Image (tube, rainbow, N blue to C red; front, top):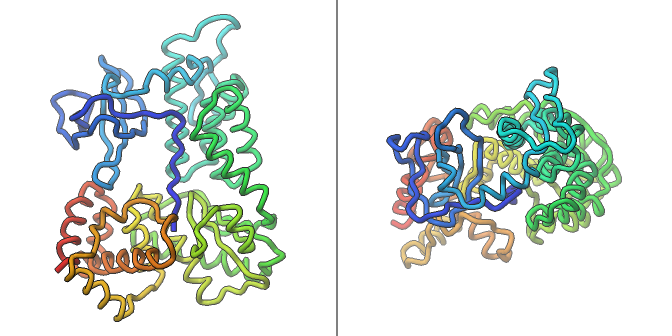
Length: 412
């Protein structure tokens, strides 16, 4: 199951209750959603040329992610966000690696407002590249600015995320350590500790490359022939699933296969976990691991998670139901009968109750959650067919209505 990849360089939220998230910066544009005070925000980019500062943002509303525009005055923590750029005391660079960097400001001088805007733009552009599966491009964008201004905490933390997504854990830790020394950040510290634990417990040192996967594996437990077959399986699965769902990326999916002991120590996954996706696929393996039916299904399951994550942020029930469905899982009749009994007695939860992480569930409740998720996705495919599901993934604003309809049908 996936662990949400959410790195908040700074806490940004909605300032006032009932804030309108709009389709554009102008106050007369359509209202996409109404946000409560304190709702967490992710800034996508800053709009230039606006008389009133305006930002493209994303926020979770009723279990789905919606994007729209807010003015700066609507965002809590924006001043801290901008100040963390150390007053943007570094020059922006073009997204093109061939373009020259802007000259650094003279020592002892303050950066101009134009430089501040350009610095924020590069930062947000790099974060967008990371989120859309292009960490290599993000690093190429960030490294020239880092050379000019090596003491920018926000720049260092973002470069670390790009390196981490690119399977270069040690470089990521170096960037993050420098960033944390400059600017303490609890969220970044938690990620640093997680990746540091992974590095200390990870014996996977051999690497193979496929068309859409880079596989790092522990050759003590995984024979090279099995590793090659794993690469082929992820490539084939990604090709099949992307054709059905519409996920696309030019980057390879990072995949790590290690001993079961190292897997649990490195990831902190629940004891019943057979795999995990947290921006990278993690798989446990036994000595002399073969690509048997169970391993094929588990690896396919996590590849589906990777594909879905390229399309947006989705509630756990949809992620897990889709991963089971597309990896060939079939609901057993006795499990379906049990779910119907729960529905008749009013004990079947709403799908929204299964929106968060499941790592804290015990094995019994986890099995029930997985079964319910598969039942929901089976019902979704029954009524919407493949084209309808793909359309939903392209239009996440429909998820609330779809979820309500599924809850009604599953409770009957």
